[in-house]
Amino acid sequence: MSAVLVTGGTRGLGAALVKHFAKRGRKVVMNYRNEAAALRVTDDIAATNAPGQVLSVRADVRSRDDVRDMYARAIAESGGVDVLINCAGINRDGPFLQLTDDDWDAVVDTHLKGTFICSQEFAKHHTTGRGNIINLGAACGIQGRINGANFCSAKGGVLALTKCMARELAPRIRVNCLTPSAVDTEEVRERYALDTPDGLQKVLSGIPMGRLGAHADVLHMVDCILAAEFTTGQNFFVNGGEFMQ
Image (cartoon, rainbow, N blue to C red; front, side, top):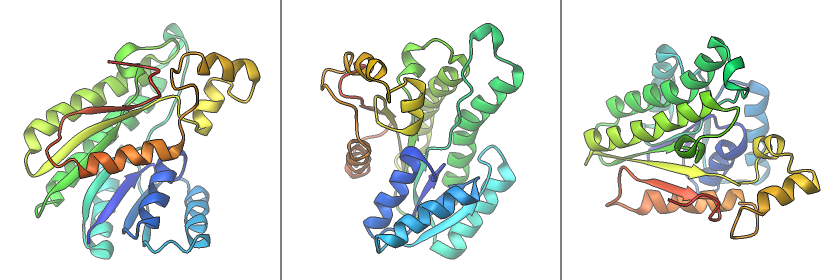
């Protein structure tokens, strides 16, 4: 069986996905940039005696050479990749008039260019059987938000890129977008001050389901997307009804 490649696999939903597939007995290629964070994830997996094999590969998703080397290792050591989940991302929030060129380039290149490069190399290397690409979106890529012009623009681009790839790569490779929000991650807790009663209540007041999402809610949707063999070019929301379209 070929591997699942998760970019940005050392924190948040990326780390949860790596652990999920390892628990399922899958081969997993975990892309990382921070070695200490990668070791924490592999140690956690080892402590649970998960049956899957995890190959850790350091690569900057913005670098074509790094991504090519990552796929070369994945093919040599894991026998290939049949699922790519593009999770790598960063945030540099700030008022629109104060964003620098570097703030823009770092965020857009990581989310959008990184998704483009990793997906293109995946499509070039995956020549047998059926493949799957799942891109991570964000509701703000549709509706926008204050202090996030770079992030929102990148995520809007990811959704458009998903649709373009879905049309061009079908039927050999299915491409879908997963858009979580109101999910309990470190980044969400920090941004919306969820560790304070006021911050938590403000967020919960906008969620019809009345709670924050858990990692398991996202993982269930990933499993559904991978199982839906007649589905491509779609955007799947996991947000408790916070954003509806």
